[in-house]
Image (cartoon, rainbow, N blue to C red; front, top):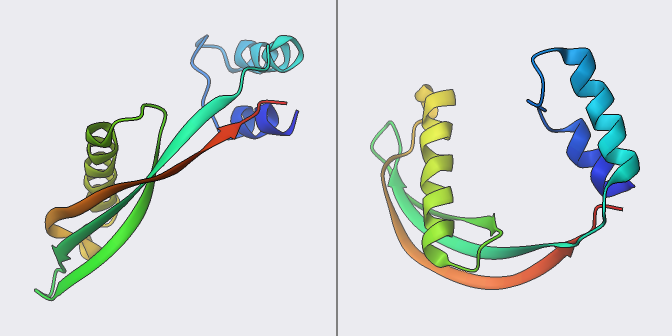
Length: 112
């Protein structure tokens, strides 16, 4: 139950507009879920960027993806960059370019 507890605790359910109905649905899901392992593929994305002060940097991030496709991982990374820049405009990552995207391996996440 640890996996599903974590997912439900850290998720925002949008089944109903009523918060109480969503809580009831979460309890029902927890008790009635079929345990099917979810496979997550991990990609290591190396990238370069410029800081707000104009300094050139290189770094890397690990991106989980359900689909075994480096294009999907690159897309998720780009979304993360956009969200990061929106949340932290004073630390924005500018002129980001992906240098490499390497498949690292996979794990299976069990819901129970």
